[in-house]
Image 1 (cartoon, rainbow, N blue to C red):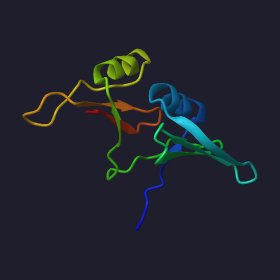
Image 2: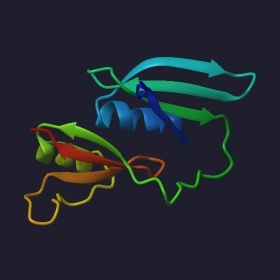
Image 3: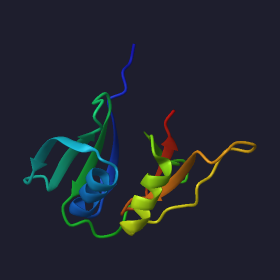
Image 4: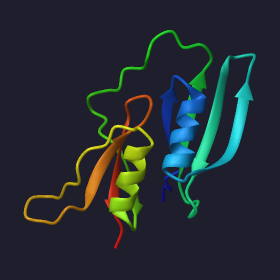
Length: 126
């Protein structure tokens, strides 16, 4: 049996990405691996459940922004107070969508975009 371990995102500005994932989404840095001789740093983040991680890969001095593939859609996180979460992300200056729902349902999610253009879906937890 396989266990999900982490998802990697390559980032242009490690500090901006850490601010987004820690301050806007409440994730916590679990470990960091610096490889200055190879010019990259890996930072792992997890939620309070600590069952799955996001890996931020920062290659020193990237020349151009990474192209987000058209097959990748988004990362999803759950939150109890969806409206307060959306208001917080909007107040922090991040790009957020309106509250949305699947056809025939009440609004139950929105998207917020991280500093590198990755979409994060925020879903109301029940």
